[in-house]
Image (cartoon, rainbow, N blue to C red):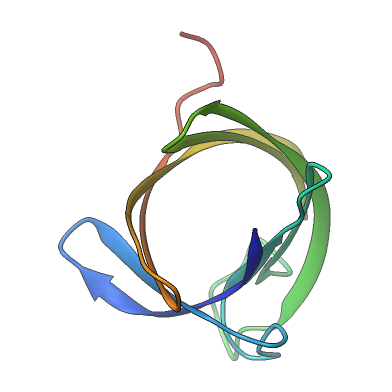
Length: 104
């Protein structure tokens, strides 16, 4: 659980740092203990021009102690993806996003 803001990349991993709140100009998410999920991400389909971010609501389900299934809204509807937790310390999280179609 917690609020996490993107700080960079290591190969195919996204490096996140724990934060007190989401950064208005960076990707991030909030994982709540009750299963709710808030994701701050690109607010539109276009990558042209300055990026604008918006918060999208969703939910998470733990499939194991290191794999979450995320269902969350985005500018075009709702998406399902998997969030693999590769490394976790107090203030540092490294994850891999898996954008399968939600089916195993």
